[in-house]
Every structure is written in structure tokens, then in C-alpha cells.
Length: 224
Image (cartoon, rainbow, N blue to C red; front, top):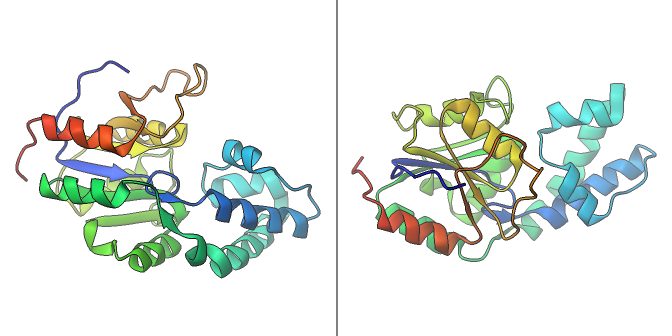
């Protein structure tokens, strides 16, 4: 994680637990689903370890042929509670303002269902901040595939490259960035485990969004 960084023209963000605090809501909806399907519930810590991929990629392995039924249970419970629990992570609104002042184009690439992602962005009044809000099933495949990142970039007119950062909190985000030919950035409070990312390492790890802002402001950001 010592690679030099090109100044970003575009920054694509993960959504859940990168920009907004979603863990408690995901945990509650996941346990409602597990209970309905006759499976043991998970702790919050276990949920954080096991939830990263999109539903269409993860639920078939968890629930077999009943995965779509489980998905209906999850989304029914999630939709019931998600806006009530939705909160920006500390410092994120200020970070988005600072990046806008740098005239950096912003987008979101999430494994949350696209319609729910855009509903949450509208609820926070953030939908105008982003050139694109791409969620699960909007592209032909979900993260870690390159497809959603490439779809998000279409709205910017900027091709993938070192000057496109993809910022997230999980290995699936870093792998998506590498698959798309973009710069992978890790943003979270906890340091990466030595074996967590395998050979797919982020180019830089920021413990907080303030550190990310300071570095971007110190780079010569090209005018788009």
C-alpha cells in the first residue's frame, strides 16, 4: 500500500459502511431472514464478516433453491426499517463537499439493490451529489466484477484508469477496482488483516475520510 497515487478525476464510492452506517440494519434484516428460513441467527460480528457480496451472488449458497424466498423476506424487513436507521458515517457529508469543491466527479458502486440505493440517496438529499448510483442488478454482474464500475463511469465520460479511484471498506471493493482497471482505495477505521486481501491489495488505506480529503487536496487535481 505504498504505490504513488494519481490525482483523481472521478471517485467511485461503495455505499454501505463506506458512506453510510448500515450494519445494524443489515444485521436485523439478515437475522429475520435466517429465523424465517429455520437457520441460526448471526452475531453482529459474524454479519460483518459474512456480508459483502450481492444477494444474487451470496443467497444461493446460503439458502439453496429457496434463496429467492429468503430474498423476499430480507427485503421486506429491510425496507421496513432501513430509512429509520440510515445515518451518514462521521465526516462523510463534509468529505463530499470538499471533493465537490475540488471539482471531482463522484459516483457510487454498491452491492445493495439499485432501487434501494437510490431511495436512500434521495432520503439523505445526496442524489444530486453523484453522477451515477449503480447498485446490484443494474449491471450484468455485481462487485467484484468490473461491470458495475464500468457502468458508473459511463455517466462521467471518463475511461477507467489510475485517475479513477474506487473507494470502499471490503475486499470485494478492492477487487472490483482492480478488475475495472481503477485505483483501489480502502477507507475504514480498522487496518486490513494480512491475509484478508490476498494478492488484491489496496493502493492506499485511509483510517478516516479527513485523511483522504487532505491527500486529495494536496494532489494536483485536473479540471474536468
